Image (cartoon, rainbow, N blue to C red):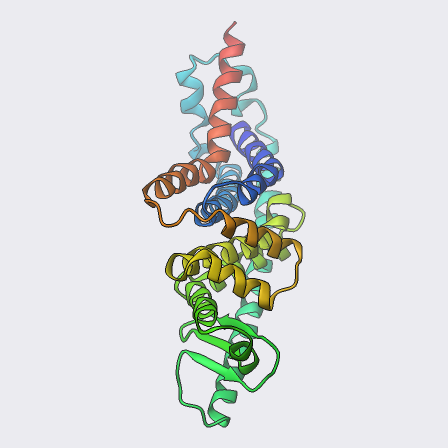
Length: 301
């Protein structure tokens, strides 16, 4: 049971302390795609660590706690798994019940969101059909307001208004549409939906509570970066200033566009994403192993 307890401790430390560190990446010079990968993989690591701890509680004899203590020459035998055998059934039952409830809530929330997304997409397609417009990747609304957004799913759709086309130049309009295409190409709606589901279901965990807002901002930054690569950062900035209010997220997007790298090699970003993402994903078990070995070595002194 001790291994499961330490693994849960690693999950708690990661889930409660990682948001502050990850938030700094959003305002730093890390690419938004890299920061997005780190946020999502940290959340996946917390979920996987929790599942692993529950499995160790339910099936304690199959865990590697005994092997680890043997490697440490049984220095930690006093606090090993065998010291608290009576708590295993109780802790395992409680943990399995909590996990089942959380999984049920996740499934229900995901199903509701998918149903809403499907209904919204169908309504837009009905508008497209009733308007007599030709089917295509962009639905143009007869609205004087500057509107531009996209709908994810199997048949991705970009929605824009005639007021948007009238307010922007041709280059700015092309940049806005490229921004929305980047959302569809990067499956940003799916990622944001997963983050929203986790945030609603596991709000008591700070990482999950802050995940939806972080993902929403980072996918916007990633789409801005993609649009700037094809149409120039100044074009994207001018379009953003024309159609958005000066809120905090818009100000951050403008600052990031002002220091757009102008198309350097993406190799360093990919390396950072892979290395940092791997560390984020395995943060709870890494903390667990470090704590167990540290405690075992200290007990030898």
